[in-house]
Amino acid sequence: MAEKIWFITGASRGFGREWAVAALDRGDKVAATARDTATLEDLTRKYGEAVLPLRLDVDDRAADFAAVTQAHDHFGRLDVVVNNAGYGQFGFIEELSETEARDQIETNVFGALWVTQAALPYLRAQRSGHLIQVSSIGGITAFPNVGIYHASKWALEGFSQALAQEVASFGIHVTLIEPGGFDTDWAGSSAKRATPLPDYAEAHRQAQEARAKRVAKSGDPKASAAAVLKIVDAEKPPLRVFFGELPLQLAKADYQSRLATWEEWQPVSIEAQG
Image 1: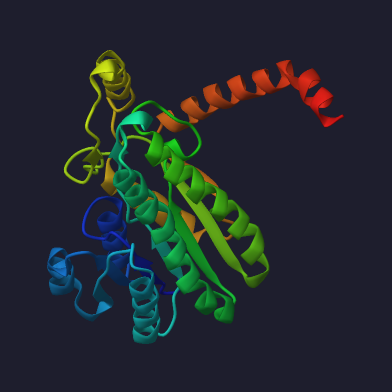
Image 2: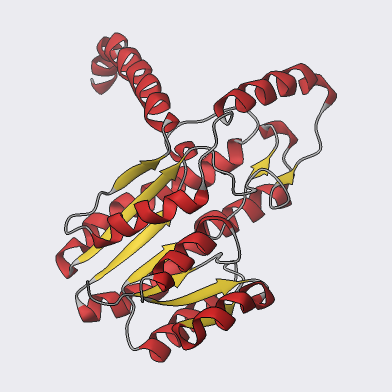
């Protein structure tokens, strides 16, 4: 297997960290970004020049383009670009402030969009490359208390599916990874929470209980590394792939319900056409 050059956002912990380590362990090279490059010092000590640590806040479009250019110039090419940086914003839709809503979209949608746009000229020129967009089971279904997070991931899913069709002729692949619950601290210190409204107290309790059941069997981020390597090494990688056992069950239930509703209301749909 030929050596690959990776660009990974949010490499300080979680999926980004585990995938960077897996790539480095097998002899690939990684441009690893983080808001605080001190979190990457252990990687540089262990892997030396195979790692290029880059300080990056993906909300900054100019910085995204500069970081991608620096990585390309440093290693000479880019093969796998992983948009992993992001966070979860908790809060019922009515509870969200403008700042909380805008910040969620800025990071989870525009951050990934800017890095994608920055990488595409290099991938087009070399007629190869693979964009890994870290979405979520929340990118195709939705639950209470994380509505704006869902909005961000549904947006990522939409532009990435369109992108896959736009760049296929250049030999560029796009894969949306849709994890279920994993032990990545996604709902812990990295998450943000809106101020709850008293009227939603019972609904919050029910949402928390439902979420606890969904994440009762959380995935191991270390195990996900072997899976992502199989995806980037595949001759024909998938546009979408779930990580974890539960997402497929949730997706089936959701889409069966959608299809049933669409079928039931099809006469009205035809009437609306005129």
